[in-house]
Amino acid sequence: MDEGPIICNTGPLIALAMVGRLEILAKLYRRVLIPDAVLQEVVSAGSGRIGAAEVESASWLERISGDLPLEPLLIQELGPGESAVIAAAHQLRARLVLIDERRARRIAEQAYGLRVKGSAGILVAAKQAGLLPAVQPLLEGMRAQGYRLSQRLIDRAVLEAGEGRRESV
Image 1 (cartoon, rainbow, N blue to C red):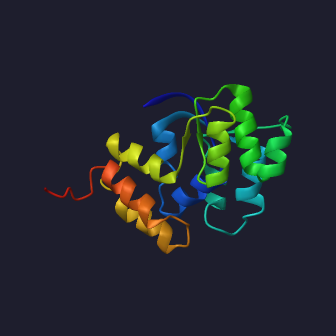
Image 2 (image 1 turned 90 degrees about the vertical axis):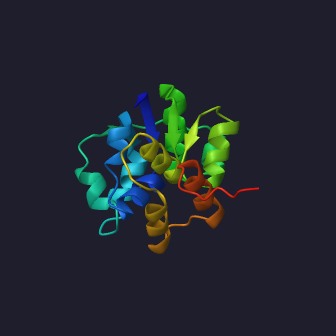
Image 3 (image 1 turned 120 degrees about the vertical axis):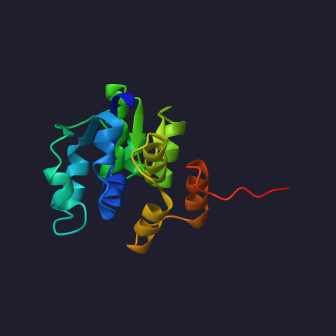
């Protein structure tokens, strides 16, 4: 499994909770950190919604408390959760951030040089580690519950997971 802490944003927490697979993060990564801003988005602001109870009861999630210094780029371009994830990853020299939102992924990679993985990538990694039998039903389940995943992303993840059909020439 991967070593070193990773910082997780709201999206992957909710998406994985939607399909009953939040614990995959604890199995894949030794340390999963979430900033206060993410905890607030999922548990407080999301009270009563999918993911709130699951995240609140996940004792393996490590909370990053306190105010993180945020650069103007983050404040101007992203929401509080994404900003806190990127700032924490940069400050703590985390090896990976888990973010689904496209703009935040681009900023994390291009402006901060961070490695980024989203919900689909997490499921692919879990399948490759032998933790899941298939990713397609989970991705389709996320989408059926309203989580935004393009068909192109699902197709790519299914192929990466070795579930896609290979066309013969």
